[in-house]
Length: 242
Image (cartoon, rainbow, N blue to C red; front, top):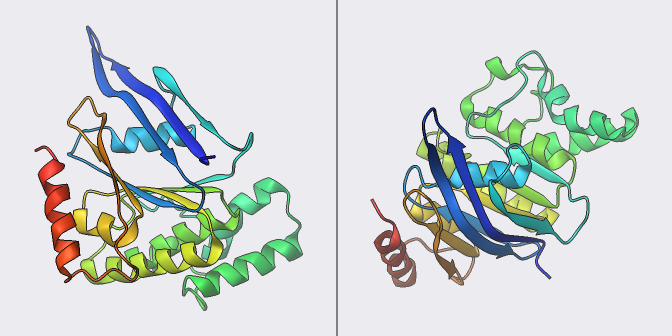
């Protein structure tokens, strides 16, 4: 049974005299512990779809349901979305406080996460003292602190330089492999989708709907210079409307 099923999801935004249809009849499934990316042209409703699944906004019609009545969902944003007045440690433990976890257990979990994402020694720094890549490491650690069933990521590496983004993509894969959770990520980069995911959802132009779902069975670690990688890259680029 899929961890998440999305069925005929649509979203319209009310304007002054009309309405703008952003998504129409979106349907797909996510298997447990899978890694899925969503790609498509700008304005196709990719980020809106993530926010609906996260419960941040409502859909206009359709439905989605989880195989758990109360799944734990975390969100990593493109803009980091850290609390500027909290230290790195305090940012990471924020969600844990909301769960009521006692302090000793919180401290241990945060310590482990800080080590995992490579931020040891920066526990008492504030976000403004960190580089963009380090801030996104904090965002990832904070998202993983509650041990989510589903991790949503909205173009998490697009604000970073390519060298930093490459390192964080590897970190994300390592954490996913080790911790066993489900990922749904929006990206505008075809190569990033091919490098990271098992399943790629291609969206149409607005109003966005699912044009095609592609299974990515390239062996891991992915060889971006292989003939098979180039072939799939060409296939995906041919599907994306401009």
